[in-house]
Length: 65
Image (cartoon, helix red, strand yellow):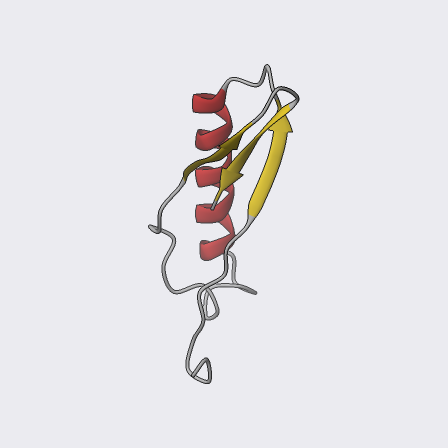
């Protein structure tokens, strides 16, 4: 089923006191830069999937990409 493509999810754990809005901007910019890099351009087809907070805890937050 993934012969022509696959969806990949990343979970990035950040410190509890991290500015989530800023962290999401950094992650979005990083993904977009990777998608435009010559070595990844043909492999990354879509960077506009869901991006947000997956989990909150007392010690950290998890960003889902």
